[in-house]
Image (cartoon, rainbow, N blue to C red; front, side, top):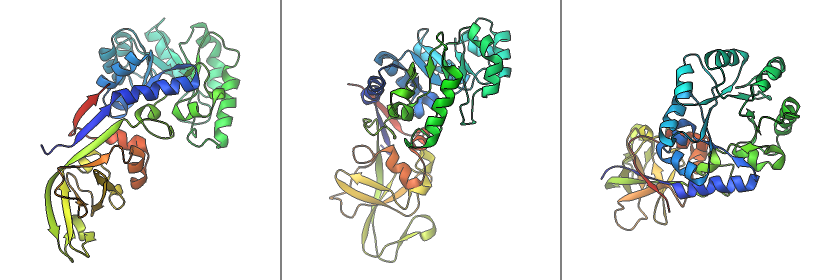
Length: 346
């Protein structure tokens, strides 16, 4: 079978979620936007619900509706994008809770869905989503009178523990919400959870750490990827591999061509640094990552391998991200549709 094998360990994923919850000693929601960070909302959502998650977070209403179909009527599903124009019927029918980001969204919500649950997202300095302090000041009493389900903000630099922005945003969030007793508060995603108890409030919202990524150093690995070898050949000195003659052999080299490429989310930029593994043997990528194929040096491997490991016990999504000059989030959410996916749960 010339199809790469992507294995998602749901037990490890749920353990990561529980461990972050235990670390914070408060309620833990679960962020499952972007198809559960590329790993499949239909499988990840129910696994986290069974592990105990009762509040989920998605980016847009359509994601929330898909999650509702999977989870049923119980859990609360928050929508980071808020109540967008045209979303009213979907919010109502899928019983979604928008996180209101502006006065316009607040008006749309109370006019279109009076009495329907909502939360409020506050901008504490990231300038991405959320009400500005001046907007919140004007709307605060009206919003609180309708008992919002959540008051939240998002940290811009939580993956840098010593960054001054963390304490600044914490102080702003406290200024905007201290004294409010009827609505739970949330500031921390994965990075904020690791900053300590002062950032935890009533709920944390772990995302990347649940899926095995940094900055959660203690995360169990969740994803492994094994790519089949289509063909193996000897390349003689002076011969090249792949597009652009970017790699030329200096010594006789045995080259395996594997069945994956940038169409599968393996970013071209990682090519010059990337390593795969044949059991315990390191195998360097040769030449460019192309759409469907990659050349790999298997000179030191005994025999012709059937598969090479790109993700797994030897290296994580963050290793690949470093090679490509990006972040683990992009690696996860870029994983393509051509993989044969297997979900395991102990």
